Image 1 (cartoon, protein in one colour):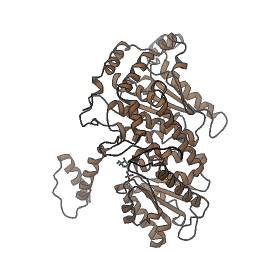
Image 2 (cartoon, rainbow, N blue to C red):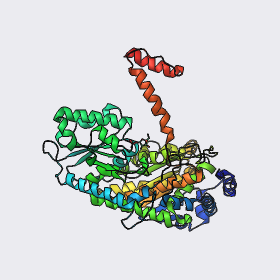
Image 3 (spheres, helix red, strand yellow):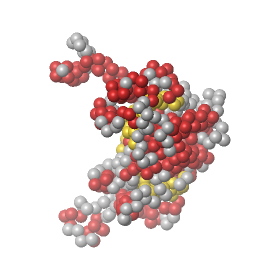
Image 4 (cartoon, rainbow, N blue to C red):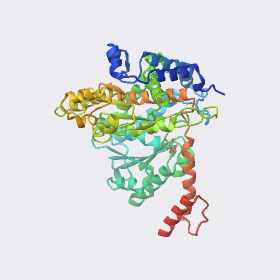
Length: 539
Ligand code: F6P
């Protein structure tokens, strides 16, 4: 039985600090400490992370670091890197850090060093990617590949789809990647309508190779291809990424055209495994390796930096402060980069599937709030949609604002407009505008309240030199380890996802009832029965 985190002295101390700091005010905190910005700005790899506009002071940060120590964060980091089976409910190690290890790094998982095997798969991916990119891998009719279609969902889709978009300038001209995930046929159909079967390569990506959406879309894609080019075409137009060789073979894909990974890579931690093949083909092996080295930079930082300067740990701990001590239940990610448009969706799975749990690792119920609701959209678009609530709503939403010093596309002064907006929004959220200031600016008295901004709306500002493959890898690893830190404090298993099972099981039953030729006997609740009957009457 683990000692519940909320019965530790450190937890009690933070509760006391929350009461004492009820009136915490960012303006006053900055006025009282001229070095606050400097003291609360940290560096990890190429990332500069300004945490000074959070509702914390040195005492609170010290309390949070103490909490991390009492939760055993340091030894859990060592356990992860040491290959221990931290995923207790599935009895698996948590070793995604091996995916980006250097050849000279030595790790151990289940009595073996995974690094040579990982490198072996990366080399096969590199060789395959080079053949596709150099037009040596030919389709059934001898045409080179112009379109790559990744069919996968969740962790087998969101990572490569997000990174393909994020690394747009690195994509080889003339090669397009598409990502099909939804079981809604609109997803696949809208892609096949735009591609030529003779020059299209399908990558079926599924860790389990049993996922309904992926297997259904893959079968439909296969039927489409066979209809256009015949059965013989399948071997040159389909490859698979999976841990399940038997199912890949059963689907009809030659295991020689399969790229493997391991059960110690969770789906949502797999974009830097073979699951990234569509990305590697698009951006090239060299850029892909740069991304891996970015991940590794933050892995090293997380593993070796003391908690008080450890950026993923601090981000996680500040999140704990809001969730557990200030009672805030959502958290926004706002990239000031259109190319990072899919980053919030990627982080939603990473964070909410990892830490949306209510049971501790020992099976006892968690007595404190766990993972927050993660959401977001790129700035500046969000400013013209939901920022009204961020500035003046009754709910406080902590947010991460992510920006880049150098532009990707240098058109006029647009980049400086973008970055200026990021910096200004963080300032406006943090410091607001008092009613006195509003009145003094000549606003009519009846509008003063409407035009007053409370401030004290906390943000992190993450600045990197440029959105390169390495920086993207650094950002992803930063959030992976933030999630790890929070899962450690909450004493939950961040690496299973039993919460997705019930819906899957019930869907199988409901689908049978919707499509049954004879009238099924419905034994659900009245609402579910009526919905099924409504569909059947219509059919
Ligand atoms: O539905 C949950 C889930 O298992 C995710 O964790 C995973 O990323 C996704 O489905 C896809 O799984 P697979 O790669 O096995 O098809």
